[in-house]
Length: 185
Image (cartoon, rainbow, N blue to C red; front, side):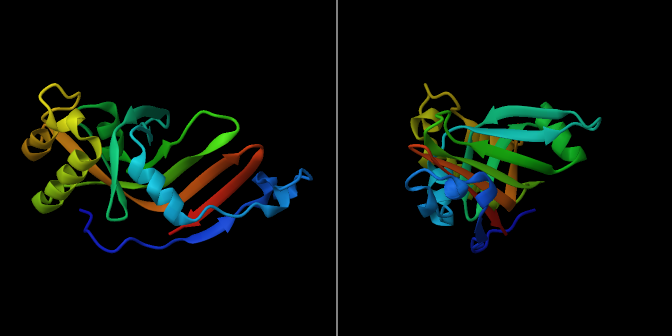
């Protein structure tokens, strides 16, 4: 079970092989790695993530989820009988991705780690508060898409997973200047 603690500061590295640093265009030589603080702000703000898990037979399973970045970890939930929960029970390795779909602007993020089931009631309450702060009326309003999710967490009708990053990647695009950042934890 994950314990709340101070968020790790990763090492940050620009991968010039996939950045515009090798490109002769004007401004390309000025490409720098994306700072982890900028990536964290995007993780905090992103509404939709895609979680990738591995089935017992090795096939991939990818599905959208809502998630919250809290205390240096990404938290997401699912029904106990859903495919991603079954996959994670077999193999906790997973990746969560978020970003945009523009070719010329934005920052796409991939967070790789191992998902751990959250059972500690105090941590669940923190996650519920983080979800409510982030998703607001989607969770707290009776008309909200995910209304009652906090009670579902408390009753065990939905399981919550914490993913502590092992490695993360950022793929930045800014008017034709591209960067590929790797963060190692």
